[in-house]
Image (cartoon, rainbow, N blue to C red; front, side, top):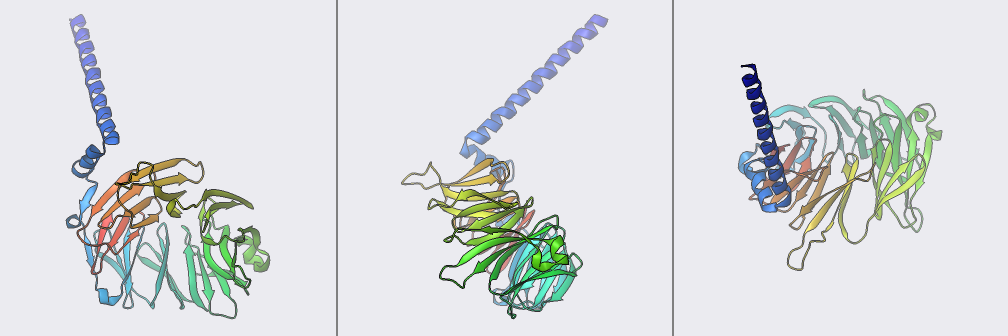
Length: 387
């Protein structure tokens, strides 16, 4: 009896192993077909994985074109600004808060759960955390640039005073930490490190025959005690190169210039991309990555294809995604790239995988990306996509 029972257990074990092996083999075959066959991948994305969605499946927000509404996405929220109201919507397109604001020309900047909204060319500045107003301030100058880090520290660039630019930093409570005054130059972009140790800005000098740009880094600790002696690094670009945009990634300053992308760190300058005529789009707004779009090698005279290439700044590891239609625009935020193809939008993650594909029967006016949400903007409505 014992031998029979033992033999039965051995047979059951072998059957179990065979079944697991068959399942694993089937999964490998399905994965191989998904990766290797574009038609099967399209079918699985739509009917099995639910990645292919249309307008009829989405929550929406009605807007009036005549109201000149501005739209932005951050964290898990959509926000609209217009008619003296800032309205926050969740992923179901339901209103979660409405705040009275004095904003005619809104500019936005978000980081993690913080949203900073300013009235460009005017005075009012608002900091929100999730759906709650943290503080509101009226500036002593005209707002030109704003930024916030993931800890809620804020930096704003002011113009319209006796100085060309004034850089002001506030802590999470809205208390001023320090000011930096630029008498003859302009600060055209600012960035804060996430550890609250450094503030960097692009400084433009337009007084000479050639416009010159440098990137300067301020020690925040030194600036609180002695602002005039707080600049610890100055990075100079080539005389025919203009720095356009900066972003902190792990205490390194990623700088988008008109001829390439540079990483500035501890006084060193590393060019990680040279922008040539083959690059159609380039962007540094992704977390730890930059991306480019160029014509793919698989293109033919009858069919032009494009390659989206995502590169990790730290280890230079690359991921690619093939785009088979002409690209109207590209939007990047944190861990997502949205490719606008006109009536279609493809959402790609940092591994080069399709997350969602959205198809519309209308012309898409604009797209805004948050951390886990996207706003598809039309003339009279906003459709909400959750990742």
